[in-house]
Length: 182
Image (cartoon, rainbow, N blue to C red; front, side, top):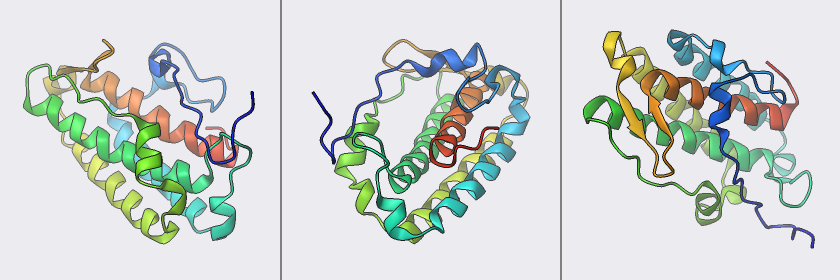
């Protein structure tokens, strides 16, 4: 059975393995990421996305094949990941061992009509979300790196492991779009 042109194929993988070994696809050695470098990595990644979003609008909306997000859809996802992780980081820093609210990235992509958004607007929103998250990580120091939080699937993070887990997502998706390994 094939995938319809507009259909999104849900990603059901557990990506927490990136905390244990380098990603053979994008090349990011997540376990080796220095926690204090994450803010700069977020900003650098956002610059990469801004370059992508400066491309031809019709090209940004084109899916490379059925079931695979377009560059614009990936950019919207990364913007929303930056936003979501800012909220989750605040929860970890402000509450004792919070349970993160669930987030269905595929449902969000459909509900928010990622493929129909304006690239120039997405670029501004992505840059703003990236900067807010980078600033939030820059504010973490000392023992606060060891504060904890959990997803409903049982995945448990410290702020430090959360930072490493986070950075893989936008790096990997920029690789998905550009083919450029880190």
